Length: 129
Length: 420
Image 1 (tube, helix red, strand yellow):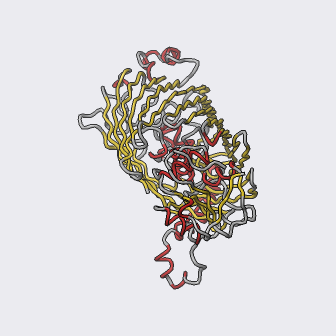
Image 2: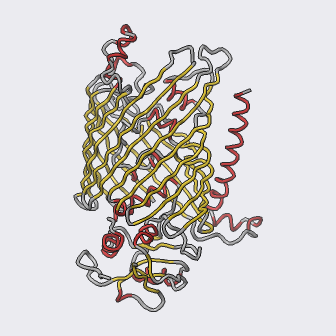
Image 3: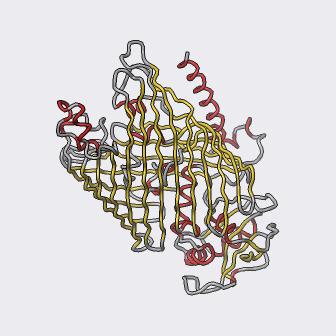
């Protein structure tokens, strides 16, 4: 797996999940569907909770482009289409890497992304298949 | 008889929608609800309730005597374009979502700003796997037409202040905005793209004077009654939406129930739009095009001749993001009321005395340029300029005297919109 490059996040980062999530790997299309707010449950049926940084956060931009292969404006438009037609919900926005860690660590079913240097053993790493 | 039974059904539908909407609205006010003693025995409120909304105000200024959304050709322009919306959604378990949105839209005489239930439905995911899902929605859903119909009243989801009017003009808006019934939806994801669909059986929302004015161009003594209709859209997204395709079609049926003394007989109206949509999204620019064929049939009204026409619309649009906060776009947009009569000549020849020199009301070609500034993530400002040849999508309510209209005209508009 290639870690982040020059695209805005200078440090390496990982996809992180709450320890309640049994998965250790995830396919790219599932990851896109999760962050596109179209896949709502883990394979065991438990609810997925999605946490993201604000649209202009360097880590959000890097994650969107490198891991999802989409641009942040596309995600924003997709979420708006869901929210304002009633066919889905928006992800929860956290305002800092610290908040990302505490929210993902404390919310069952949570998924997010975080700089490796900020991670600890309260969250699991998810690898892309 | 027919009218009574349809009213009874209408009541049933309204009750069903209330049944869905009321709990959502109650759940959206958790604090007062928890204080009420008789509600205190309810289980604790789930944390995944979401409330979002938006408010926008526009100003429009047009040339000649051509009015768009209010008296825009007056010296002071028109402020008669306002949109407010508030929605709530909750997902008590991962398979089930309740959603409802109230909207008020003021847009000239055709839309006086009354608050209405835009959508209100329950969504149950019957099957959800790693690569596919299948579900059902019951209640009032937005009609899936083209890229924009589902969220056409929400400025942040539009590419411009005014959607391309060729396809998203206000007359069809009334017929196609939303409908009550049942939708199925599904999705299949693979390395070769995501294929999704939604569609179902519905009754169009045709109650009220607005719908009547939109359909007939005036008020009549009787009323419209909805009939069983069908709607659907298939989307194909490649590479996470870098390339998007959609084909949507609806078959909307309604009848007319004449009043006590009414020269207009119990006719039927069938509206069948088919829209092909395509979009390419790069980091800085997006290209969008949509092509629509609209089959419109008016039958057995006696007071006016049967009508059976195919309208045609298309546009090409390019948007460029200079920075994440500044975006510009250009668009060429064509509307033909009757594709077999692109200049309105046949239409004039039918009644030359009344229609001489007004063939340009049967088409509109609009060149638009515009700019968007995201002042903050929640607040945006937009400005755009339209140079239009033809008056095809101008409303008869805002322009009661057809003889006043000019063929070549301009429209300038600005909009401020806040969301949360």
